[in-house]
Amino acid sequence: MRICIALTAVLPVAGCAPLGAPTIALFGAYFPSWLASALAGILGAVLVRLVFVRAGIDDAIPVRLPVYLCIALGLGFLFSHLGFGR
Image (cartoon, rainbow, N blue to C red; front, top):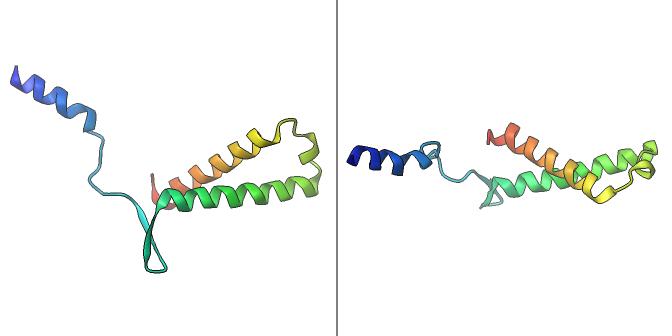
């Protein structure tokens, strides 16, 4: 019975890795990787918007804010996955 209780308590954290928080050393300080991913997503969305404006696609987008927010999130997650493996 005690083994079942111990396994039940341990199973929710079985996928956790003891690697610590991913950080980036920048100018002598440590920044969390999600901050770099968010910045990359925002900059990527701005670049995509500039391309859309030049191509004339921006005027055809009915709701711009959610579209560009999703583009920023997608690029941020992609940067996080490719850059940090998380």
